[in-house]
Length: 177
Image (cartoon, rainbow, N blue to C red):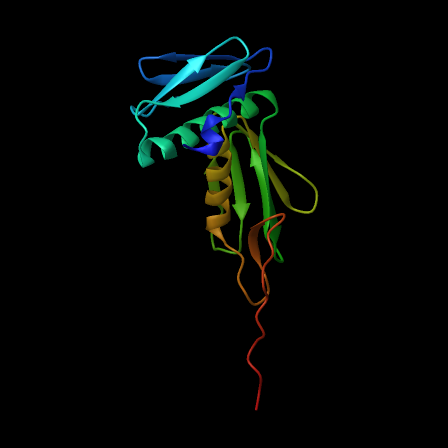
């Protein structure tokens, strides 16, 4: 049995979790949902959610832990939210939010316009920092990875878009003679 999957998920006040037609839905400030795997069951009480396996198999044990983690992430997202920070390093590299788009100048001959998905908030911090916040952990991480993918940090000078806590190993350049 999955050790993580056995733990119940506490439901704080103001959050409502329900299961209908194989879809788990959590409602608070926003509404998040995901499809429940067929090999697990979910029991919901007033204060907690318990994920159980239908059969004791290796696959259902893995799905039990996954389902519990996804429900936990939905509850955390609706209460506190998730945040990723990206830092832009490089001369002339900059970003700005214009309406529902993030406009990036990353050393190309053109600007890159990233359409901000619904449910996410992108703001600019100090020192060319992009702050991505939202209730859906997967969506926040995917947006950060997409923006980083436009110009990943290069290994010689470290120029590019990187996570704030990311460490880039700088290589030594060629030596003459």
